[in-house]
Length: 330
Image (cartoon, rainbow, N blue to C red; front, top):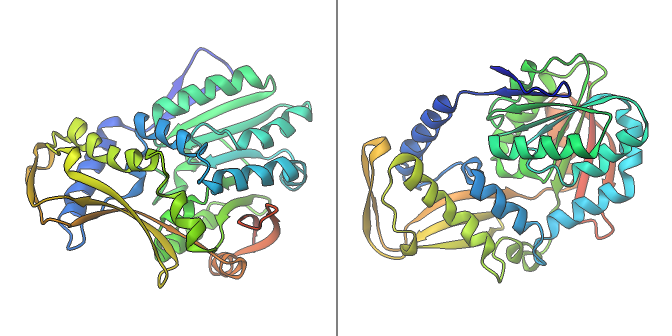
């Protein structure tokens, strides 16, 4: 559905809210019935979750945001030179805080340009679009409210001939290795010969740096993780007593990933009316809520190769904690 907004520089493309809720219910029913209970991390990002994530980005322990931001500050003009005037399509745009360094270069060029944020949070999309229209007089915003995680081809709904697809924040690391490969292949399949793909990736480093980034001293990440229980209570009629669960973050060296879990402090049964189930938890049993895989530069090059994408440019922060990689189709 395309919604006109009364502003000629803004169009809003919305998925069905009912369909999204049905998908949420299905994923909860499937995930909480698995031998290792699990939930897709995309469900962190309701309105409250998106606000908490913005707070996480300002935490002293959370280096990924600062590292990627520093790359933009130092190299946004070089990125723009590669992208030129292509419409910018951002998967998981959120508040587009870091992306604004790149949008500012577009604006300084003094020519009309198009930015297409794609996000699962309708509220965040609308707020961000309004801010960008105030900040940049040359921008046109085509906002797409959609779940892109398994289907990057949802961007076909946007009326674009050529595009620069961007996926920042190392969000690809939330996918399993297999899901990452599928996502990149599907992304490559929607790219034309002149399109580009700019990908943010968190690089492998010491667990002493990694773990605190996902288990901060102020407990904001814990609140972010626990928020998914509040969401199930609110949207699916769950009866979780959130106080009986705790946030857990650990580094799985064998898999090369940070894992986040919600651990039940006691044996309990939780009715969830929206999926017509009562979910049983043993004391100490967990819901696996997020993976965050870490990569080497060679890993990133190989991921692209298997998706028929060629790594053309790389940019790093001064500590080489983070990588922005520019791909072009084969």
